[in-house]
Length: 286
Image 1: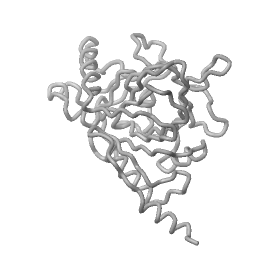
Image 2 (image 1 turned 90 degrees about the vertical axis):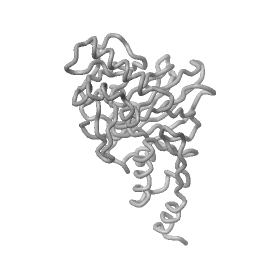
Image 3 (image 1 turned 180 degrees about the horizontal axis):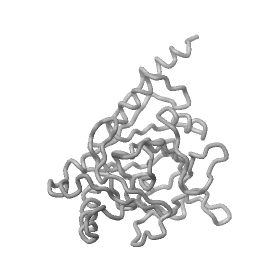
Image 4 (image 1 turned 60 degrees about the vertical axis):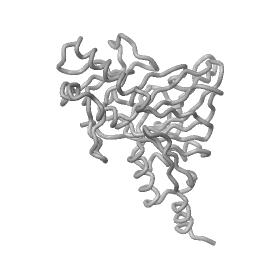
């Protein structure tokens, strides 16, 4: 009978990475996340994640415990910020779902389209990673779009790079809001972060603003701030920077909130959608 170490060596040897799009993303095969992850396999995950910004594993069978254990491989799971409890065991677990019981959604962010954003950018210490696992998906729509914030920054016109250099922007969040609103006076939480942040692992600069939650750029007249932000939003959402993920049950994605944005496409209101989310605590952006 093979030893546990031998089993891990064999599983690590089958680890394969395939790029998903020119913009970002890679699919990893040869791994069952119900199995333990040793240091060598963890490093393979990290290398693929840092290179491709988002990784996908398909055909996974994950309960809450297994998903949280996988998240803990890469850091401390962050408690949800919605103010609701979704799991009796794990405060880091959030359900994203339009399923309703007694007329109330069992999950957060239940319906329709969602504008581009980065998770927890309204907090002092945002999530560095998000893991989203698909349990039920509609027949069409509800896809997740990912934008490469590295290339979005690198391809900015030099005059805009100069104007935003060293500046901070205000990110504000209102509960269960999926589309940008004109008024954010009733924001549940907000925080000022650099417009351009430096990734602590790769050293690359990424554009750290987003249409859903970024409200103003510090130190600029409001009208100029609004104009520049609109240009930044339009620029980073160009199709050439984006990968669109069409979900299947059993998919799990892990993306890097420090160098990506994500959004959701609309889907039929009468069809069920259920995904389980865990975020991993990051560091204060610089």
